[in-house]
Image (cartoon, rainbow, N blue to C red; front, side, top):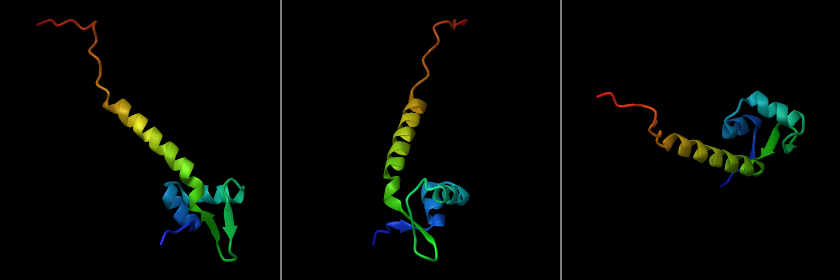
Length: 79
């Protein structure tokens, strides 16, 4: 079963951010939320774009790190 709604704690773990940050976002209506009377539930699907952007960023960084360092033409071989 796919879980669509997450608690604040689960959302923080899913996004890999502090719980207090998710609470702040929810309190200031920066993310969509649902209050079931006992707890605040957050729809997980609203973060799809966030994860797509993070994957693009990670791929870009990895590509940069894998790029070989070009040889400096100003270095003279003294051997």
